[in-house]
Length: 174
Image (cartoon, rainbow, N blue to C red):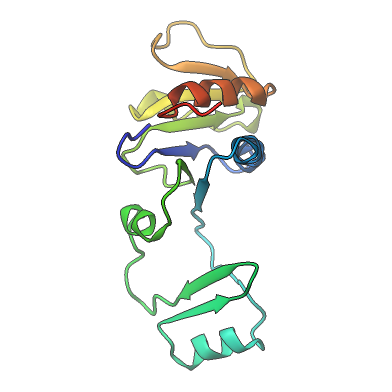
């Protein structure tokens, strides 16, 4: 875990179960009173509101950022208009403080990561080529010969993944 930001990346191929595992972890940690932020990366364009709504119309008119605020939630939409995609560090800096920030995606970033791996998908594991992966949650048995420091967790037992994460959280709140 990045001690400065309490950031943990969750990486894996599409269809591996990252979001399902994250839903479980976020729900359990939030139930305990921890504040958890999530950054989810997408390679696709993201439609956040119908084009006829006021906020979309204002973005299309040229606003750099539009904030939608209500008593229930706040959202900020920023049009990049050809600018480079902001860095993960830039995104993290915009978030409110939290006990933990989970980052889905950003495989290329240098941060501690949990890989979600299902061999049945036919995709190679990421951990052999990424020294930042500190744990693997998989539905397969631990392969022989891998580094003993790499935690191997049962993806079908999300409570085990949560227990591993709890040990890594600073000032473990129980």
